[in-house]
Image 1: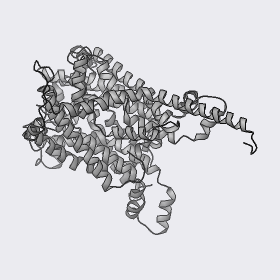
Image 2: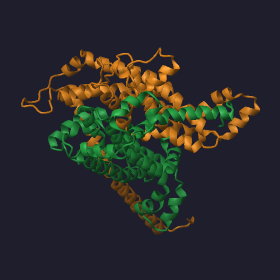
Image 3: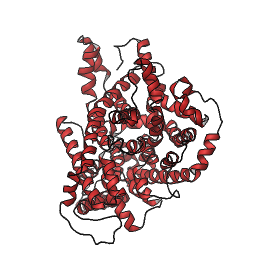
Image 4: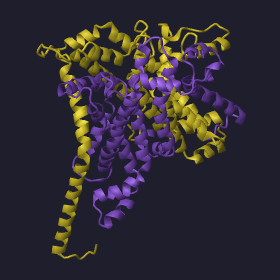
Amino acid sequence: MTQRTDVSGRAEAVTTFRTWRSAEARTAWLLSTPALIGLTAFIVVPFLLALVLSFTNQRLISPLPTRFIGIENYLSTLADAGFWQGLINNVWFVAIVVPLQSALALFLAILVNSRIRGRVAFRTVYFMPVVTVMAAAAVTWTLLLNPNGLVNAFLDVITFGTFTPDWLGSTTWALPAVMAVSIWQGTGFQMIILLAALQDVPEELYEAAELDGAGSWQKFLNVTLPGIRNGLIFVVTVTTILAFRLFDQVWIMPQVPGGPLDSTRTMMLHLVETGFGAQAIGRASAVAVIFFVLVLALTLVQRRFIREEGGAA
Amino acid sequence: MRARGLPHTAQYVVMLLLAAFFLFPLLYMVASSFKQDGVVLSDADSIAAFLPIPFVGVENFVDAIERASVVQSFFNSMVISGSIVGLGLVVNSLLGYALARLRFRGRTLLVAFVIALIIIPFEALAVPLLFLSARLGWLDTYHVQILPFVANPLFIYLFYTFFLNVPVEIEEAARIDGAGPLRTFVSVVAPLAKPAYATVAILGFLFSWGQFLWPVMVTRGIDVRPLALGIGTFKTTQPVQWGDIMAYAALMTIPLVIVFLLFQRYFVQGVASSGVKG
């Protein structure tokens, strides 16, 4: 633009600019509306509704009018042994699956990131379980984990017959079996994310570290890990949240959902049994609110622990 | 980075062992689906588990299709997943684009709003949604299984971060040529975003095809039930026909494998260039 524009010309330019800007804003809202309606109707509204319902005696179908009953749903939930059993199992599940799965995923990512022949084929194979529907995987594993199944046949050989538990029929081993299946199914996805992160670490950093005489392990600690920090944070956060949502496997794999004797009961199973099985919508909403608060708290604690720099979720 | 700590052969051995771990249940599933029902269990303790002998051809598949009305539930799954993915790609990418590129009041607030919604797990919403759906008379319909999953905050966020990384100059060129924001998006930006679309399509298909909790809650008859729930019908009828179950599991998995293999190249690219990795 020239320095000496006359006044009317400038005014005109400003008006065009304004209409252009407001046209842009109008388009923006137009483009945003469909998704915003969806988010509001199916996330915000139900979320607020859960809060409200958790203080009522609402049932799915009931002739009785809905009544406000204060924190009774919360008290009865907290007094329910089934709820605590579910929470404890979830915590165990997170404590074991999150570190194991993240470490295995990182290991796989490093393996398929090396310049080795056939790495794409290996990557595809490691990812295949992710592409398997959980219901199909869970049923297949139920067969494999049968007391006389393939897993035990293998263990029988390598442990000389000392370790062949009745996986899904045992209160001790049912939850570890569910954990193993979850790791088998979920690791490939984390691998892809970490692989993408690994490929972003500049090669020069490794070269510089090599010049400084760093060994493989030192390079891993000082170059690789800091380089993929955000990827790792994402993986750990998402795995934790997903671990709290554990449901399909414990519904399908044991003889009775959550069994034997509640040893694989999870919070989600408890929520479904309360809200759907017993049709106690009010009480199930209280479980949902507690669940949300727990997940939120965990996410915040994790964020604080690993103060991230980027804007990742 | 190269895994310089390991010699090549050792690395291959490790990688092959891991490949065996990830692949053997799937091989077992496929082998068993071509096998006589009675021997699936008895063969399970030896290498014979991976051999489809006695081979019964597609008999198990035919049985599974008859017993669990696979044709109907396959159709249902296609309708449900297809709608979620198709509609989702459009609405989520539009919002992602608006947030990344267009200037309007309240944009920063909207970005924060979308990110906050990511951590609300669907399961926490399932109960009130079930209640609402029952009130609206939506139970046992397709739309009750579709609409709640179309707008997805995680996918919006993925598109948002992807569009942020598209060089502005490309759009400016289109703008100078007189294209409005929508035209610019449709003809210039969207075609560039193929990896992002592929990533969201694969993830969306994976999530929706395997959905289990929500359909259990909102459907009863087989009329609108998706494939994943059909597997339950086998466990209740005795004697358990394991060959049929494995055939059903294989049928359920094949579409996902096809979708994945078709889009795999874009998918890895998409994860690399979007916000997923942080």
